[in-house]
Length: 204
Image (cartoon, rainbow, N blue to C red; front, top):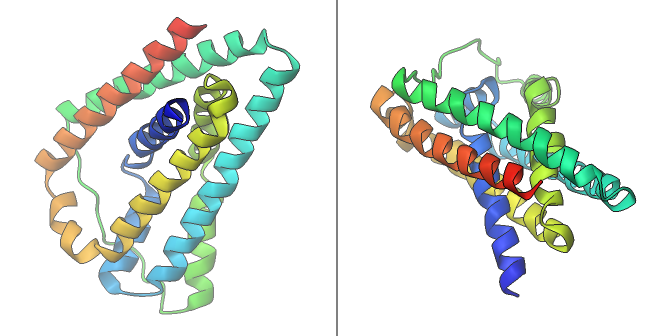
């Protein structure tokens, strides 16, 4: 039971570290939340998309490792290297913090347009595949039989993040406009990613 909880907590922490980075998807969710336009639809699309991608990453990489145990070493080294690079970039952002802008083109109140925009920002973003299929898949593979608990923790992080971002947008908009807030957040993200990266490389 303890191993399952540990894997789930690891999945939650790793996903939260990856998901909070400034990006077009987060900006769009926040913007829709502030405007109160189809917030539930946008949030659900983001959550279910993440659940699908995380499942593919956890299952796909896990299957590769199961078929070839030697692949775990390669996956751990590659995933660890990416996490260390991500951590370094987050640390760099902490020294030069940006802000999450909520301005942008209007969706015109069209539900169809909002849905298509959300899908495009999610599925046409190459980074989402790197984050979910490779990085989270690599970390999950290191948990062996607990990789699906890791996946559950990962999806839970996505659920909490997008619900808070979308429905708490009006309260959070001030926070996201402060560079000092992002300095702290990026510092925490950098520490988490670097720790995960070192752990992955050490396990190889």
